[in-house]
Length: 206
Image (tube, rainbow, N blue to C red; front, side, top):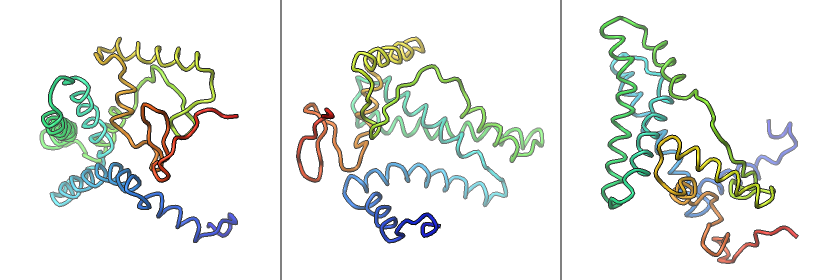
C-alpha cells in the first residue's frame, strides 16, 4: 500500500518507530495511550472467559475516564498521592457499573449482551457538543487572532462553569495534566521548548 502511494516504507516505519519509542517523551506518550486500552482489553478477556460477549469496552472506558477526571478536577485541595488512587478507583468502579448494567439485563431479563453493550456504548459516547476550540498547529497553537482565541477560551470556560465546574481555568489545567502534548516539545512559562535541543521555539511566524 505504501509503495502504491509512492511512499518509502522504510522511512514510514522508521517514523512510526521514532514517534512511538524514539525518545523518553515518545515512550511516555505511548504508555499513556496504550495503558487504558490494555486494561480494557484485559477486562474484556475476562468476560469472554465467562462466555459473556462484552463489546462495550469503549463506553465503559469513557464513563470511567469521565468519573476519574471529575475526581481530579473536584478534589483540588487534596494531595496528589491521594487523588490519583481515588481517581483510578472511581474510574474502575464507574466502568464496572456501566458494564454491569448489561450483565443485569442478561441475568434477569435474558437481554442479548451484544446488543445491550453496543447500546450502552452509544449512550456513553453520543452527546451534544456545547463548545469547541480549534488548535490546528500541533494541538497547541492557532492562526486565529489573539482576541478571538481569548473570547473562545472564555466562552468554553463559561460552559464549564455552567455545568457545575469549579476550576477557574479548567482547560489550561487539563492541558498541563496531559503534558507532554507533543513528544519533542514542552510547554513552559517561557513558551515552547525543543526538548531534544533544549532551546526555546518562537511562537510567532515571520
